[in-house]
Every structure is written in C-alpha cells, then in structure tokens.
Amino acid sequence: MRKTQVGIVGAGPAGLFLAHLLRKAGVEVVVLEARTREYLETSPHRIRAGVLEWGTREMVARAGVGDRMVQEGLGHGGIYLAFEGQLLHLDFHALAGRGIWVYGQQYLVTDLIRHHLEAGGEILFSHEVVGVEDLEEAPTLVYRTPDGRLERLRCEFAVGADGSHSLARKSIPGIQVHQKTYPYAWLGILAQTRPAAEELIYASHPRGFALFSMRSPSLARNYLQVAPEERLEAWPEERIWEELSLRLSGVAEVQPGPILEKSLTPMRSLVVEPMQHGRFFLVGDAAHVVPPTGAKGMNLAFCDVAVLYRALVAFYKEGEASLLARYTQEALRHVWQAELFSYWMTTLLHTAADPFEDRLREAKLRHLGESLHLQRFLAENYVGLHTSGRYTHYIPQSA
Ligand SMILES: Cc1cc2nc3c(=O)[nH]c(=O)nc-3n(C[C@H](O)[C@H](O)[C@H](O)COP(=O)(O)OP(=O)(O)OC[C@H]3O[C@@H](n4cnc5c(N)ncnc54)[C@H](O)[C@@H]3O)c2cc1C
Image (cartoon, rainbow, N blue to C red; front, side):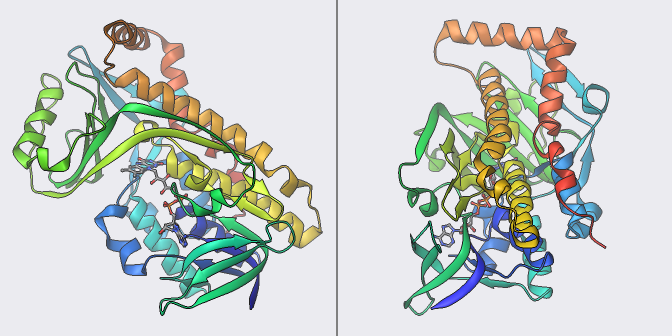
C-alpha cells in the first residue's frame, strides 16, 4: 500500500491550491482526481466561476501562482443593479475600500495544475476515489486506477475536496447536513460577443432575474432565471437573446453573438457540520454549496484552504494540533457569512411565485437604492471583507 503525508481527493480549485501550498511548505502531498487533465482544463462543463474577491486574488498572487491571473484578469470597481427601469452603480472602492477581479475558474485550475506539476508535485488524473477508510487513525483513500484496479493510499491526513456531489462528505459518520433548495434555476451561456457593460449587471425584472457578466472584453457570460424543471432544448439561441434583451430593456443594450456553451444550474444552499472527523477534513463545495448569485463558491473554497493550510503547517512544523482541532469552528464563520449573503442576494433579485413575497422584494430593492448602509453591506460582502479578506496573511508571500 502507498503512503503519503496528505492525500487530497479532487483537483478542483480547493484541492489544487491546498496541494500547491503544502508542497511549497515541504509537506508530501498526493492528489487523486477522477477526471483527465484535458477535461478539467477544456470541458465546457467546467467553465463555472469567474469572480474573485480581492482577498482570493491576493492569496493566489502571494502563493506565486497568479502570474497569468494578474496579466489577463480584469479589475472591477463595482457592479450595476438594474431594477424598475433604473441602473444603480455600486462603487465598491467608495463603499468597501476594495474591488473584485474577474478571471475564469477554468483558467485558474489550468494555472494551478501547471505550477504544481512543473514544481514536481503529483496529481494522479483519471484516478477515482471510491471509498475512505480509517478516518481517525490513518485515513486511507481507496481508488480505482485507469486500468480498473483498486488500490489504497494510506495518509497521515486526508482532505475531501471533491466538489458538491462529494463522496468524502458521505464518509463522515453522523455528519449533519443543513440545506435549502430554491424554486428556480439558472440558464447560463458563454457567448462570443461584447459584454453588455464593462462591469457586471444584476438585473431584477418582472420576467425574472438576469445576470450579465464576462470572461474577457469579447466573451460574455450571461444567465437567466428559469424554472427548476426547465430543459435546455426549450431555449434555442434566438429565444435566449430575446429574453436577455427583454430583461435589460431600457437600461443597456445586449449584443447577440455565437453561443459557445449552454448550461442549467439548480440553485441550492448546503452546509455540513462538522467539516472534519479524526484526521479527515472537508474543503470547498464538498462542505458547502451556495447559489451562484453572490459569486461566493470558489472564494469560499480558498478561505477553507487558507484555514486548513495554516493548521496543517502548524502541526508539521511545530507539532501544534490545536488549530486542526478548531478547523470546523473557524471555517464555519466565513461559510455562514457567505451563506447569509448568497441567500440575501438570491432572494432579493429573483422573482418569487408568491405576489406578497414579490412586493416585499421590490420594497427591499427600492430601500437598497436609497440606503447607503445596505449598499455598504452588499459591497463589503461582495468584495469579501468578511470572508477571504480575513485570511490573506495566512498565505506566506512567495519569493
Ligand atoms: C454554473 C456555475 C457558476 C458558478 N459561478 C461562480 C462564481 O461566479 N463565483 C464563485 O466563486 N463560484 C461560482 N461557482 C461555484 C464554483 O464553481 C465552486 O464553488 C468551485 O468549483 C468549488 O471548488 P472545489 O474545488 O471545492 O470543487 P470542484 O471545482 O467541484 O472540484 C472537485 C474536483 O473533485 C473531482 N472529484 C469528484 N469526485 C471525485 C472522486 N470520487 N475521486 C477523485 N476526484 C473526484 C472532480 O472531478 C473535480 O475536479 C459556480 C458554479 C457553477 C456550477
């Protein structure tokens, strides 16, 4: 049986960032990833997130893996809210003293893989973990090799970074799952066209919510609120562009272009407690899921990694185990803060089926338009002052 110090399940942003940091700190790490490298770097199903809180950008840069992110990403100083025919600009620098950074998750994953492999790190692609044993003494990852053999990796510590359908989560005995589903989904497109504005527009419209975002000055990433049972076949390109234009009419112009990718994302919130058992820990979507409205998912993954990284390094360098014991307690603070904000943004912007709820929602939007306090609440949470902003100093500045 193979042995290592830290075994990680999953080469998403969480698993890769943790692997990179630990390797740099001199800890032996093995990452097991079910998919191929090509799938992670190029599949349209892995386009996903694109908004980095300032603290996430800072952590990535401090870790020495942000060269392309800094060069090719876009700095944004705020967002727009469109409602009742008006366009409200929220200036994050004025409201919260920080901005955000737009850089695609898939690019970041590609960068992290490249840096880790070039530095001699080990990622076993096409190796699916099918079970976790002995969580308390020496967590052992049971995995299937590409030729179908079952093998075991015995670890001093193991980390489940295997995303929202996590097998790792299910391996923790007695784990509590707190969750909520929403009565809508997002139909997302990636299109070869000029984005509707230079910064993101969150549009609340009687026909439903729409988000206008981007991956670059010539790649638009737009979303439409649709029913949870909606099917992609019901949305040919013309219908999508027509609906996007309707939901933004009077405030900005939508420029149609070739659609490169279409997807449907159900909306749910989920948090598990505890995020650890014995010598086994959960990070990222394996431990919590947020609806994408607040752009928090990937950022939360980086927060968890910062907290767990500091605790593991304290253990390996100083023999200090107390930070590891407190991992769940520390992580749940940023997790629930982001859950709160994501829930708030989601219910503020999506039309509700109940007319009473919907009138209340409209009143909340008007209040936000007039209240500097509410605008500051939104800005502080969006840029991540209370999430990644708390952890940048956990990541040592790389030489
Ligand atoms: C459409 C969409 C839009 C989003 N937009 C945003 C946004 O704007 N901002 C934001 O911050 N977040 C956003 N998110 C959320 C963000 O993508 C996730 O929070 C992020 O991917 C979490 O990273 P992770 O590393 O925890 O999990 P993942 O990225 O899901 O990575 C998990 C990895 O584990 C692997 N794996 C799974 N099971 C196994 C197994 N048994 N054995 C081995 N490997 C396994 C998977 O193949 C995968 O590579 C969005 C998500 C979606 C779907």
